[in-house]
Image (cartoon, rainbow, N blue to C red; front, side, top):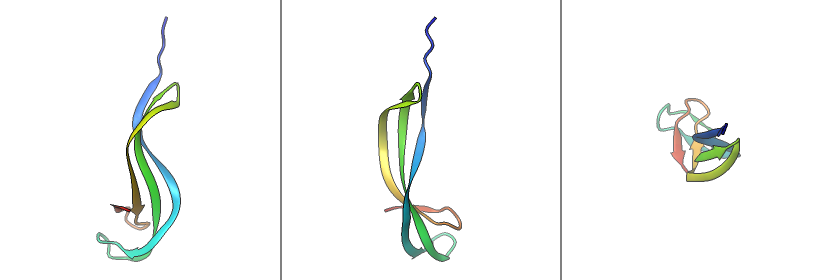
Length: 68
């Protein structure tokens, strides 16, 4: 019997605080959070491949995100 456990999904890594800016969606001025987002393929919970990497800054109030 052969059993393969694999996964495909989007992951985010917290990179720390971002700039202080005004959100285009909720119009509040706050410090945003920097994150790295990517898609990955795993086999037995070990990441094998990652693609579509991008860095984002996210509003702490409404969750709107813009590419940094």
